Image (tube, rainbow, N blue to C red):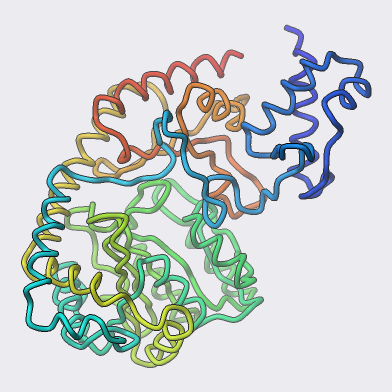
Length: 445
């Protein structure tokens, strides 16, 4: 079957943009100019640019023309995050919420308003949090299997801020950091901002290739290992206890700091012990309440070796001075009265139900994920193209993520990540039916 001329042009432009032959900021020919150069109709030229724009490779500026986008951070992710259209179903970002959470917030605000220390919330707070708040966090973390005194706990403005201050405190520009070949996009953004040298570790069926990690540590000065042992994003895997012990052994042998991201760990019941439990002297553990309670509740927790705490405290001072006192007071009230534990249990059940919907509606497709995760990974057939599929879904008002923002290696797999937590179950079910149809149709396009 002959390939339409406009698709050939789309592929050629896409290749030139991704390889850098067309640099970010370059203005492309006008629609009429492209039509004249390629011997096509103006309407066809318009279709070429429309597809490139839907793929996030170009942007149109009224009165100025069409420009190549900076794709170092893909559209819709990290610092370049774009809002999803109001008429689109968002399977790109997870914003899981439960009925009744707004009522809990109203009640908590009333309780804070009548508390005796309201005046203190109007003043600057200690950079790493008030002692009583850090003690609340420490008690919460003990229920997660991490025994840490309050003097090893710091409160940050969300887990992303926790990762940022860890990078600022422990790493310098040019430092080598071992990461999974598919990893959390937010850490990629940090690496780009702080000019870290990310070295990708390939995945096996059971987790990261620890043989590859050991070879890397033996040949390069790896300063840190960034890992998500409990509920990896985007693959949903949980690292086994033996693999955790081996990873810690590699870190002890070669000296890198372990950065343990536990943002989604609350979704897994009875996981192996966190790395910060087994190796507290070489692990910085980062988590928070954005995923488990509400994305707008920007309260993160960092547990660190005592030797690293002063540098982390200085990084908090340099970035935000302290976490807003009112937000922290609300969060710690919920930590102490059991609200967080209750919401986490409900969200585990909610995630399981959504995974069941995904399993039903996408049955027969090669899904990769965890049975209580809010996302699933869908590898595509060898001849499929994720950007074409996501562009097709975008035209049907469905937003999904390709592998590009998660990829740290030279090879970007053809796959999409489906976030399951940002729409109601009925809408999720019907949307996944559309995703399945588009995936199947694209495989035979």
